[in-house]
Image (cartoon, rainbow, N blue to C red; front, top):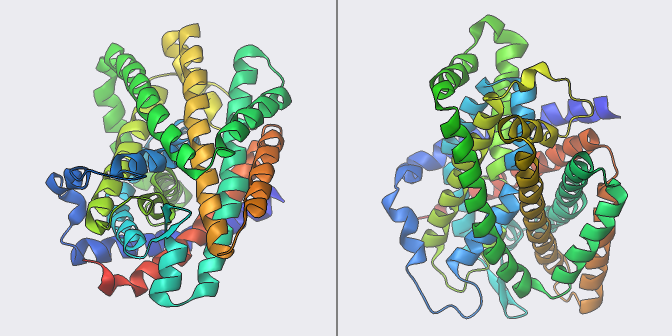
Length: 424
């Protein structure tokens, strides 16, 4: 089963990578390399007087979904399986696909609609109202529900449970049940509450992680030049041109896209919730989000791992988080483990509640007359899946989600390219 999923994963990601690169290059030219327009990235924050959701809150909601354990576990997997060179291609992927994040967020705001007193939008909406293709919009919405609630949420639960088991020896099932109860409390309070919670917890834990990772790197600053050199050299290891270089390139691009989701369309769902029609401002804000996620958080995690002797350790049924956990323990001792467990919990929890919001948004699109009963069922499913996700096999989850992300990317790139004339 795993071999079949891996093969499908590679084929789909080959197609998706080509499409995302093509779209990124096309929109870079069309929008005059907007991803390097640093000055205008912050103009979207200047407006005020929001009734429900501000641009800052949309950014925090997006970061909550993007950061998750992808910045902690996903990048560790990239380094473990693809080597240090994957980080270089992760950087390149970020700059190449950044315009895709702008375009999808622009279109998300352009076609958003107010439902239950909160703006809703994203690829399903611009596929429906822009391309007049309701069925493709519904397919995308259904895939979002499966990807974020059945996929991402279970990965987050699995990572939380595994890290706590490694740290404190607590049975993953018990962790899963407790996580389900906490999540249930938040999501049962509604969409507006989810957005508010995300905007409050994300800044706090991000600052803590920046301080810790900055301390580790500064403490090992003499190793930094060699590590940066290794990242670049290994990215162009032509001696292993066949599977070696190609694997490094694919994994690097895949992890870069996986961490920032630029071109996948999910970021547009969060961007669309803003209480204004400033499509350009929201697009620029989303570029900030993907730069911060990949170029800052993922890079800091990767450097801390590379500053340890992780390559001397054999990891079994690897999730990725064990590698990061080992690196922090290597640098900080038992304090590092405590910091990582807390960071994992908050990052992963933010992804869970943000992912649930994406799922609820999509359900409301599929069932335009969706009532409180259908939303409650979705919440119940989410809560149950967190318990299940805490005990299933990690590698199966990653392959499953990777395949779904690739399909979402293919649909979204098709949509934004067809709507390219709407983008300014």
